[in-house]
Figure 1: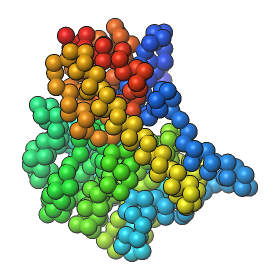
Figure 2: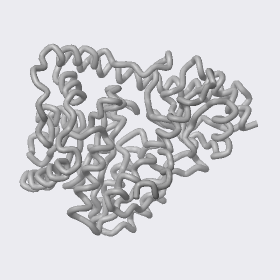
Figure 3: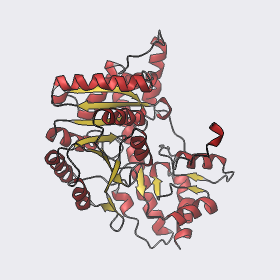
Figure 4: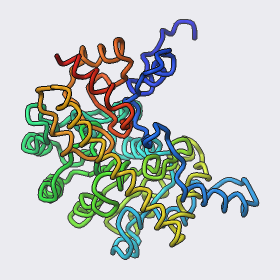
Amino acid sequence: MLDQLTMAPSDPILGLTDAFRKDPNPDKINLGVGVYKDESGHTPILNSVAQARQRILAAETTKNYLAIDGSPEYSQVVQELLFGAGHALLGSGRTVTVQAPGGTGALRVAADFLHQHFPAARVWISEPTWANHSQIFRLAGIQVQTYPYFDARTNALDFAAMCRALDSAPAGDIILLHGCCHNPTGVDPTPDQWRDLAGLLTARHLLPLVDFAYQGLGRGLREDAEGLATLCAALPELLVASSFSKNFGLYNERAGALTLVAATPEAAQQVLSHLKICIRANYSNPPAHGAAIITTVLQDTQLRQEWEGEVRAMRQRIGQMRALFVATLRQKGVVRDFSFIERQQGMFSFSGLNKEQVETLRHVHGIYIVGGGRINVAGMTRQNMDPLCNAIAAVLN
């Protein structure tokens, strides 16, 4: 029976990383997978994380299971980070959080829950979006629809087309939105556009599911949450899948959360009971260590201050790499205008390079970029910038 299966296609992003590892080229550059690199090209352990880890290991007395929904202390710090300390939702009883293995795990729990209880609902995802979004929802049994997002002619958000598409969505459908630092384009709605989106979703009775994986890496921790805050002010219900892989550097700890805002405290508890069933049948209960690190950092004034400084430094380095990339391409004689790279936010940018150019960069120059032309700006360094821009100039010319 099993020998009847054929080889499945590689994941478009993680498969690229596998190919990169096998490439013997000593000068190869990986700008595919979404992992932050420091100026030396390494993915560091944040000092705040290292200190929290030492405290946890020194005080740890058991490896017992967590509850199905995870640690209540973790849920509290997650909500405070999402909504801001003192937000009215925090004391309302309308908000519940379940711990999940990464943002991907949170999205899958949300997908399972939504399909079980609203089987006719479709999920709308942006075109383009993170490569795994469609697969997560389809494998959960949810029909996937797309809405326009990026205008390749202007390298900006096509907000009018986005709104036209969402205005056609039937009441009860789910709209997946990127909270900030849109993956893969790096283009986010403006504050006014977030308000217009909130009004449209309210009028059409659509349920937002916010994928919030990059808080702090765009404009700032609170600034990046402004779109979420706008949705919360206008809508009685929404879901947020958050991840701490990027802003805590906890990639292999798989620390994430699914947060629900309901219309009433009673509804929130009812949904929580069903989320627990989804979790129990999926991974039973979440991993503890990454969440414990996050809780320790965010509950300690000194560690939190250091962590916020480290996030700020990552954000600033990404901004510097954007500016250096644009300037270096110009120095190399590239005529095409890449100035839009500086206007985009977060770890990723849509480069505008086509599939053939991406393939040439990989096979001729050892530069690995996702097939759609998405570049991980956080993988650029001053050391690899010159060979990177030389290669792009050669491909374009």
